[in-house]
Image (cartoon, rainbow, N blue to C red):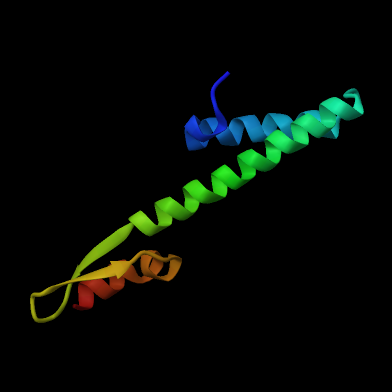
Length: 89
């Protein structure tokens, strides 16, 4: 079995979705449910960590009106307003 920390984001998300589906059904015994819950918790933490790492890596280089480049951290507002700001700069 692949270690949790080695999973790609998409694979970890699919596994977490499967675990949630299994937990929604009442066919599992208590011990199995606890194991699935523990695995799901680890996967959720891994997914949040991967998202946080990706957010930190995504940065936009923006030309200022003087022709210099500035490093701007990526956020949702930058993504939505980026095109209009770049056009006016």
